[in-house]
Image 1 (spheres, helix red, strand yellow):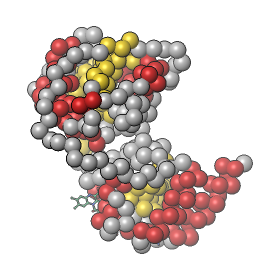
Image 2: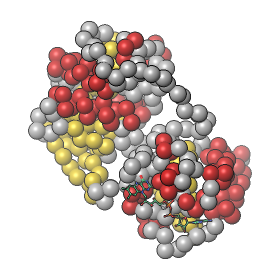
Image 3: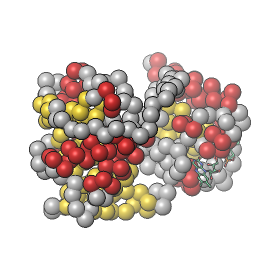
Length: 325
Ligand SMILES: Cc1cc2nc3c(=O)[nH]c(=O)nc-3n(C[C@H](O)[C@H](O)[C@H](O)COP(=O)(O)OP(=O)(O)OC[C@H]3O[C@@H](n4cnc5c(N)ncnc54)[C@H](O)[C@@H]3O)c2cc1C
């Protein structure tokens, strides 16, 4: 529908939208009363379409084609731009994920409109959409508006209230035809990352982060044990990643992932500005550090000045005891 708010689907590459889509759809619905989804995929599932309807999408624009996998910005951006030009939505919103960061930036550039990246707030003021986004590594919040529509924005996960899934609510499915450009980049090989069995870092409600104070890669097992008890993801500082202790996909911060969990717990993390840039919007921050002067204590809600190797096993035991009750 012309003038609609579109939510660009992030999926698990197996035909199911990710949980973060409930936040994007929830926010769009709160702003304008209803929302539509746009899904570029090589395989949608009935279950996935049902899920989008239950999260409040009134319509799903389904662009399903084998050549849309794997994701390539050079293919996806022209496809979305063509559809946007034809259907004239007022806004195009997506979650901040590694894929959509690039995809929506490319699409906005193609459409010749602005992109508000990494938004933590959206509000309609008269006939303008105002986006709030952190700048200067999260030290300031800026409010921005677009010179013209469509308003393209990416929304930080775990910040916006998710839509409540309502069983029985369904979305109309429209399968528009669009021209797929020929990709210059050729797919060579996909190597799946070894799953940790823990929630994904950017989506997790609880994140445990280990820094240089972990002393070595072998010690992350104590954080993984705690994570398994409380359903947390395990991340790391850049110092730990640079030392080769954790893969880069687990890095939190300016040059890593941005997270906004309900609870962040830092172990042996000093709290450098570049690390804070990736986690300072966490709702509750707990820091465990031997050094009472560590900068992380300045933004922590709770701090424990102690050796993490003594604290972590105690916390794990205590969580187990409480959760088993
Ligand atoms: C351009 C640029 C981009 C960057 N991007 C990022 C980024 O994305 N993410 C990021 O994290 N950093 C980033 N950095 C690096 C950042 O400046 C810091 O160097 C890094 O965050 C430090 O990591 P750390 O806190 O683990 O290590 P350290 O600063 O060395 O801190 C280790 C802490 O562990 C404590 N400790 C030691 N042993 C124990 C123990 N047994 N128990 C409890 N506490 C203990 C120490 O007291 C200390 O505070 C970037 C830097 C630059 C210049």
